Length: 402
Image (cartoon, rainbow, N blue to C red):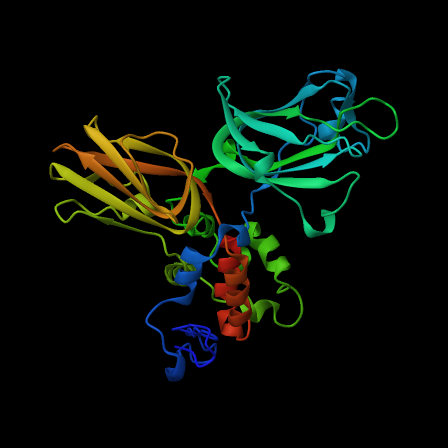
């Protein structure tokens, strides 16, 4: 108990956590800060997704068609960033933005007109088949610091949702009459929707270096002979000058292969009775994985945190499993599914459990997109560029995480 009669039994001023940092000269950790875990692994698993950036996320609403409850002639201002606005004097109103393709919405920004904002609103996600789901309300709204206290023309933010979305609908109520005696209760200058089109999803189970290896093997002997990598070299500022040839001479396919092994953390494990599944990551379709027991399984480590949208399996000669159970490891625990469907979960590891004695798989496609932690990447690049012998590694990692 404290001596000041506060009735406190425990008191703590500070907790300091030390982790190991790589030494760029010796590539060894300092004994005084030795750690049993990999710092990057911890960051990949624990850093909040809000601090990560998904390179493919961009504005998906600009110029898209807009339907409104009234004042149709002004509807296009909502998505065209024209500097003008849409408004209505109705007591309730709605706005519907057609994204014209299936998308995943990351976040939404709305710019109200004057003071004519809705005190209450609902946001619905509409699928391509017309199914409508309530995803957000004004309770989910946040306001940036620079916009707080702003009475006129205020920007507000709403976080996204993990649903396939073809259209976004806003239903507005309890408006505020404009101060210019125009009798307008709702006004919107702009709605900006950020996200990614589903058509841009790729197989995140594939080894990231596969694309680079295939490029180099198309007749090129060294990296500097691959035209596709010119942009990467230029971005790093490594072309030109006296070092141009010396930096790249001898960077062969074999060197690329060895470097990729150091950076690619994708992996797959499987039940001991089965055949090897490693080909599923590097050369899908080149070999068949066989479960060889009644209850076989595959567990994938995708190497980065990913948005996992769906899974497609190509079976060998109709040797399909009786049932496929999916477990995706997320920040809030394992999410399990009893069949292949739309998952839209964020995680790094997942497991497929197969029931059936004669299961054989040619290809597993885990469709989604990878999150890249730019802080980790930039730290690695700076470390590698301290010594020119690591230039090839920096170039390759820049290519893989571009």
